[in-house]
Length: 204
Image (cartoon, rainbow, N blue to C red; front, side, top):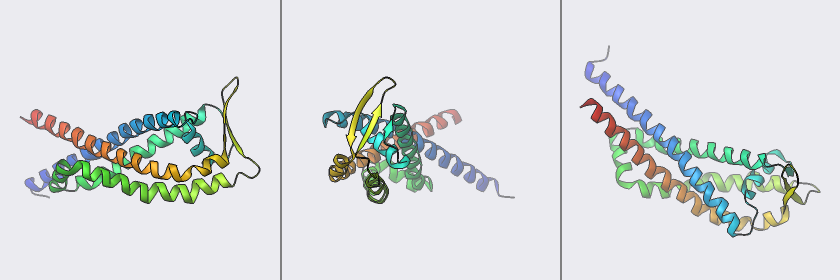
């Protein structure tokens, strides 16, 4: 059997790990919601139909070209799920030890910006050039992606126009991903700190 002090350390380590992972997942979800709102606003400012990103995302995955409003919802859910998972992964290294957690407390903004840039370079860029663009280019004979409401066609997006603006999308995504990382890790620090503080008060 483990000595009482060792068992206590194991329990405390498990609680710290669970708290940080839970805070990271929640923070990733919140940051993804904020990022989604900014993306929808950016689409409006750029003159694109609201929800274009999610329609393109679902189009690239399903290879369909005609959608109802459910496509935007499906794309949003996929985005939020990915953001939650990334928030959990980003928080994991800081749960390894108290020293790692203290580094999060001191340098969360810097770590967040760096993590966002890493997500962009290691995930967004390869997925865009390796999956989404080839799938969009494979729409043989289909030059338009349509989005429909129950009673009428809302808008159409030319595949050629989407491909032409991909370079701009790539660079804009860097800023968005860095913002996501910044918000996610700052929230992780705040949420986990609040939970740890509440536990100390309960113990006292």
